[in-house]
Structure formats: structure tokens, C-alpha cells
Amino acid sequence: MKTQPTQSAPTRQPLWLVRAMTTLYCKHIHRGSQLCTQCSDLIAFETQRAQQCCRDSGTLSCRECHRQCYPDAKRLEINHIVRWAEPKMRWRKPILIARYYVQSLLN
Image (cartoon, rainbow, N blue to C red; front, side):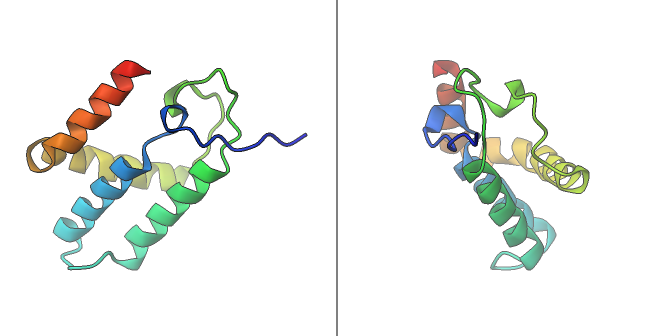
């Protein structure tokens, strides 16, 4: 029996934050005004992963999930982007980061 993907905002990883971090990373590292194909593919993969998530209703976040959604190469790539972009996002987009922290406290 296949479970339905969860669509409520508190139960899945915030896609808006992944998109913002990837966009910031691509603009500074890949030096383009638009997203490169590698970064746009990563965002598309993250969107697809979130839509096909078959998480139990009791699990609140991806950190608490026992299932591994990312292949090793994608996980390393997204970890690299997050580690690079997170300190910069605090200064460049403080409202987005504040929104993320408030949502994580409410969950």
C-alpha cells in the first residue's frame, strides 16, 4: 500500500529555503545571472523528493525520518551548498532565516 505524499508545510523540509540557498550559491560560485543547469537540476530533484515523500504522519521533519531520500552524490552536493550558503544567508536574507527559525520552533 502506497502512502500519499504529505503536503502540509510543517511536515516537510522548506523548499523555499533550499531554493534561496542554491540560488545564492549559484550566483556567487558559478557567476551567472541565471541558475546553471546543475543547480536547477538540484532544485528540481529536491522538489520531486519532497512531493514523493512517504513520511509517516508522526514524523515532523526530515531530520527525524529513518529513510534516506538522497543518493550519496546528491547528499554531498546539497550539504556543500548548505554549509557554504547558511552563514551568508544570515546577513543577506535575515528575514528568510528568521522565518525558518520561527517555523522550526513552532513545530
